[in-house]
Image (cartoon, rainbow, N blue to C red; front, side, top):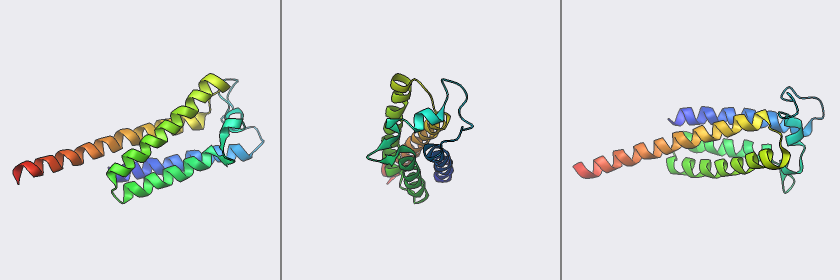
Length: 139
């Protein structure tokens, strides 16, 4: 499970790096599909930074932490950090939908990645709990 989560975290780093590129670039982006799907609008909005730090950079850091924690088998920490990341991503998703009314393809992909990491890490923690519970009964 840890390798799957680490691979997903690596995919999250790549997607976040693409979004970071859009944040600093003024050219037309490949994810600028139509008036409802435009990463440039989202990544150049005032919501694309937190205290002058690009949200995509926060995503890169978060995915690197998740990958490292997964690699070092820190199941509970992976789950807790992934939940925080999911909450952050959901907040940004609500801003895209309700305030900007434009979607970023990279952000939606990142949302799917963090949701998968949450589900996988929940299963990982649950499996560990069941194994420990069974070991406690037989001892």
